[in-house]
Image 1 (cartoon, rainbow, N blue to C red):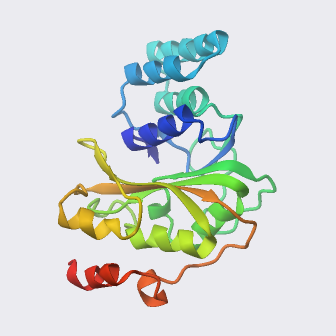
Image 2 (image 1 turned 90 degrees about the vertical axis):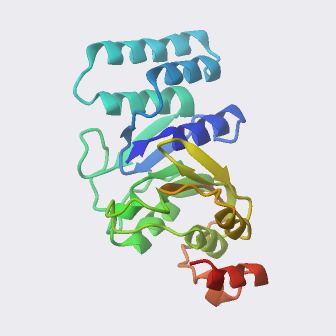
Image 3 (image 1 turned 60 degrees about the vertical axis):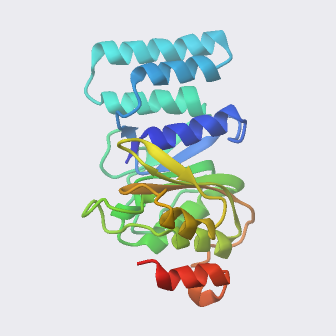
Length: 257
């Protein structure tokens, strides 16, 4: 669970274009630290660019400079916290994680969690693949997101052998959105090192991107949803069997191996 260049790019861009809620209540499923592929200089530059209030900007930069100078234990979590404050510009931040010192909640994400609060932005940055009960995990994300709120899922797609229990296919996220009427705001396949990525606007684009070699080896899928209804969470049926794929996508299901 770490903020890489992929999450940095997506969240910075959505903040810049005012597509994130103002001062959102943020919940992370698995507390993220700072991965390190984005330099402290880049983080400083984004804070200078995105924070318009001079006093607030100076506070964030002072925290950043102090954290780097002091090199305290837990520095990577400090840097992640500065990112959430200065770039995402959170109103509040909470995390569910039984193994990190800064998490507010220590529930096992294999099981239902008892939190009454709902959140404007729920983040899964590399946690789902480590949770065996993925049905409950994605139901928890759904249940804790306010109607109209956003969910980000960032999970391994290709490569990453033995990193976790699962890699997630594009059809998982497209079918999850279809079953629960999520609006897909962004769908990206990206590799962390070296950093490269490609965007897909529809499920039908995925076979073309694979055939053209544009999806990097060892890539993650990063998808940002908007929850559009108050309906209960629905487990999806795979689009191929539900008959929701186009004829071309169904052909690709057989041809791409």
